[in-house]
Figure 1 (spheres, helix red, strand yellow):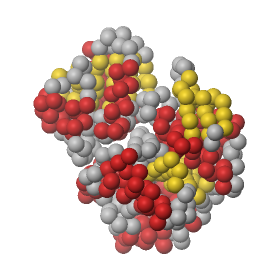
Figure 2 (tube, helix red, strand yellow):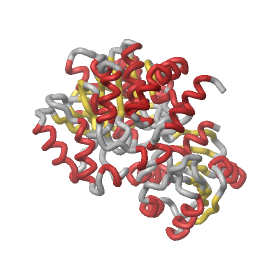
Figure 3 (spheres, one colour):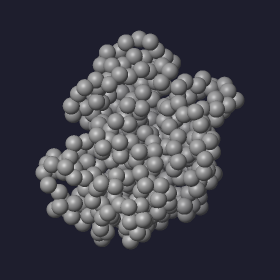
Length: 430
């Protein structure tokens, strides 16, 4: 076994990992993170950051912003989670993943200190990212929160602008059981006098952000107030007529095909406009246009309404909560197909009944469990789905479920894979 593989095994098996285990790995304070920053001599102070929170759209927004900054010529660090195939996806500089050597070196150097601090998987990964970005002498970092905001490890960064994409019901056992409570946690990333962009105006939570911004004298900008987008017909990409701060910017296109990306694009353009206005990181319209167009190529983003094949058309999407899946369901309905085959797996800490009740009744379901401890047992998923009126069968693995869907699907059918980021990850990993 390679040294890198041993290191990854240590990270995955020795450290509490929320993505795999759930609640047991959640740390409700920043003490470990602050201890790690102390140990590394405050790497978070080495660069300015764009800090992103929100229920959905964090990853897509982070990748688009990163691609634009790269296009403009800034050496850009990108920190996202979870990874889909390779741990190193979480830490990138100008689209290139952290090297295996750097991962090994970091863990070996500080392994003994970890025993004292006892950090979680997320806390160590975050510390590794900051240390790496500092060593790489990046100009700027785009950083998404793991969960929430106020108590998320990433909340120790020093942002020049913050973005909260939207608020939906997710991780309610940690962030609260109402939109207002969840918004309160996400609003925890708002910093004194630092501009905060809100991606979507939502009546239920507007006030939460307004009060927090007022308290911290942070300029508050709702993306839709300064960015106007009008869809233009286009195949293989999404194009929009763009107006920013009442000025026409012409047509801009993104290679991400999910209809929900329109909201993310609005957030991204409002954030980029704010960065440009500040003067330290000027960004031209031409580089915004080019950066958006090559988002996939320059950052390697995957799993967002990704078309894996045609005839039958196979699509996967990482949308996994009520908010994310409601967009997915709408977009499935807009597709042309004869029959829908739905490969579905979920994790055990979602409101499964609520999510299942949103899914189309007119479909054949292939139930499966992603290969993580947090996966919802397939028998339980099948049972709950049956109660909701969905028809389908359980399979022993994600791969087996997809094979069965392929075997049953005709050329004009649609196979959709989703319900959990980890189901999509297994399919993409092959």
